[in-house]
Image (cartoon, rainbow, N blue to C red; front, side, top):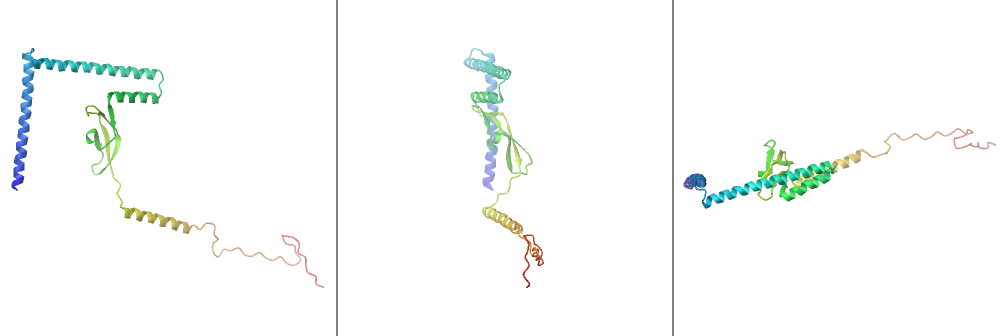
Length: 209
């Protein structure tokens, strides 16, 4: 009981320290902002402006690259490119930008889960796309909860296989094929009277002399 109480006190103190550090970080950001505005000739201000300039240049370059991709894609459509050619073009852009398609549903941060919560199984509905450089999710995937099939033991699977074999044997015994039913034998052919011709030819009567 005493150990649990000490752990709770330690957690409370850690939460308080975290809150204090967050406030200090926010205060430092405000101080840096004020310094940049009031003293534009300091090294901090120069670094801030340099970082802003790099962000603007990167944004311009990204826009130019995107416009070039759109122009190339539209030109391919106008020239009658096949779906396979367009798919290859898109795959080339994905490799250049290091945009990765993720189908591993164990990466929970990249997927949205839908479906009844009572089901434990999961099925991929839509793949996710993740930035290979930063790990940021660009387009989230979708995973559906489904009912998971029961996991049979080896004994249960063997018993099920034996039952299937017995059913097959019974079905074969009930269908003997073209065997004649008992009691339905054809009656013997009647003998032709003496002196009459049979179907196979004339019958010669014996000499009564």
